[in-house]
Length: 168
Image (cartoon, rainbow, N blue to C red; front, side, top):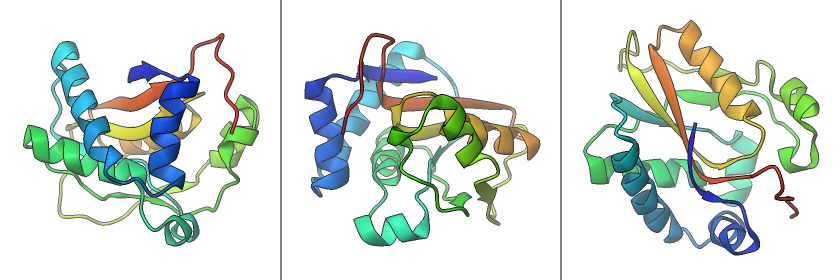
């Protein structure tokens, strides 16, 4: 898993502005920062996927921030963004849950939908906004690996350090 910036009061405002205040233009800037970080890390992957929202949350918010970031990133590096993962279970807001509670809440919460893209032996970049415990991306990564994906690289904009406390 690769993250670009540590979770702080300042960096939180960028993502929360995007997610909760409809500042979707921020997704372009986040994608540019991710692109620079990918160049530094020099990992190779075949396509980009993103962490999905459940349809109820998507309807309420009006957009998926991870999808928007992935779209701009894919466009800027010339790789396809594939809408393949479905969040079949409506889950609680994870920020309120412990690592163990998140793991339980997310178990089997995702499925793959049919797509014409063949994932067998491919390397995938999975995009999300915040890496807290890794429960979400771990569950999706397991699903992808069980379906023939070679490697899953995870990239998030923010990550929490051990001494950084997250509040919303």
